[in-house]
Image (cartoon, rainbow, N blue to C red; front, side, top):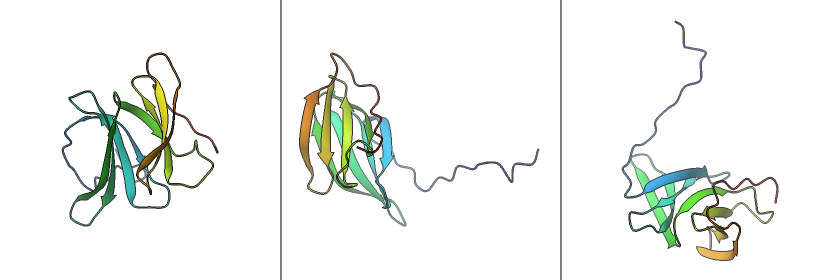
Length: 121
C-alpha cells in the first residue's frame, strides 16, 4: 500500500501532564497553544505552552472552577488573545491570554458545557 500521498501526523514533542486534558487550541498566528482540562483535585486548568526547539515551554497557568471541557478563539470579536472556555459546572468564561485575566463569566448551562463553538464573534 502506497501512503506517500496520505495525510501524516508529525509529533513535535511529547510531554506528560498532571491532569486530564480535554481540549487543545492553537493560538492564532503563533507557535503557542492552550491546553484545557481538569486536575485530580477537580479544578479547571488552562495552560499556555509554546513550542521550543528542545521542549515545550509553559508560559503561564490559570486554575479556576470545576474543570475546563472545551474552548474556542472564534467566539470573541476583539483580538486573537481571548478564548471562550466551557466549564464542567455550566459556566462559560472569557479569558484574556495577554493580560492573564478572566474578563467575563456567565452561567451558560445547568450542568456542563460540552463544547464551545465560535464563529466570528
